[in-house]
Length: 161
Image (cartoon, rainbow, N blue to C red):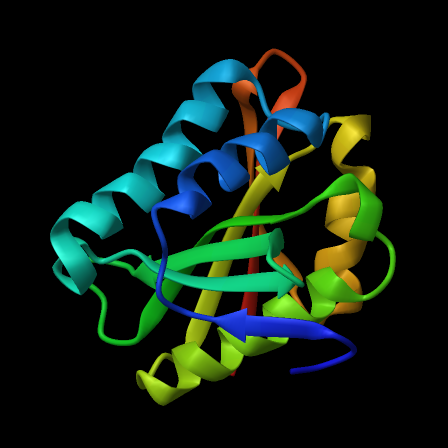
């Protein structure tokens, strides 16, 4: 427990609705993205670790306040993707995202991971997200022009553990 938060790795059925709520109210994700984020939690609940999706959940009391979803990149020896990191609006800007990221990095290192990749958008909406990644030691590795839409590039960040 850090600063009142309890961190855990194993998803619960109640996390499905909680993750949906965090993603919907974040202001960052569209309906399709929310559905994908929720589906990864559901898939893990149904298939266990064999699905390749791993999590860090942060609770305050009995309420989920943030989470990450990550997994090994198929075909690589020790690279991982951070698929999702999201913190509810009330707890944003208080260091919870950094704590979740640190717990995630520690878990990846335990699994012999050496590199973590994160993808995000180049639009102004994601400027705070990019700043967050850079502040936490990630560096821009690649930029794919017009990937998501015209003038919305895919930015790929990496951190070597």
